[in-house]
Length: 239
Image 1 (cartoon, one colour):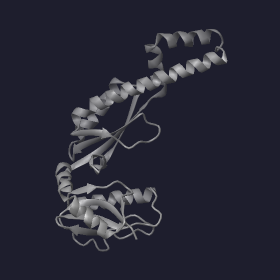
Image 2 (cartoon, helix red, strand yellow; image 1 turned 120 degrees about the vertical axis):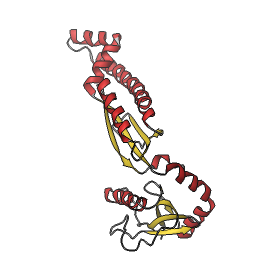
Image 3 (cartoon, one colour; image 1 turned 180 degrees about the horizontal axis):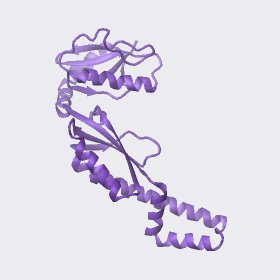
Image 4 (spheres, one colour; image 1 turned 180 degrees about the vertical axis):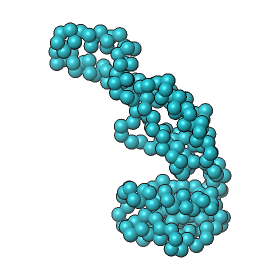
């Protein structure tokens, strides 16, 4: 059976026994594979591994439990090795790199910030900034809505203007949040948002980030920002 890897901890991890279970249905017991001064936190891998909510939460729970006692380098959901021996081999061959990353990410957490536009606000902004679009809208309205071709052309131009606005606002958000973070990287992609940003912070460093988010939304009413965290610093682990 293949081996599912949750993360890599520094030092020897005490026997997890029956107290910690991870992914799978029923949940599979978690164990530690120690090689030198590193331990991989693993379990058997279910025959069919899918990103079900229960398993995603179990993955995160294992990292949180082990992380209370040990610095842990988190692996993203779905990290699988052929068997336990292969895991130990990787720990041995890349020990220096793992130690460096554990030092860099010690006592650090990740927050994910997603951005979307408030539809009415961004449309009003686009029309106010683009005289050509405003004139087209007024001409279509004056002629009872315009021809089909006029409406299609207008819709295409508005969509292009909104995409350009998304690109500018993505840069605006990243620039505004960067001073509150130790590092910033692109976050996991998901539908419905024009920006997903992963932010690395000290465990007690969220206040500055949340303040910057609040100021952004106040100054730019077309923006809606969602903050999720704290999370293990998945986005800042170098593969």
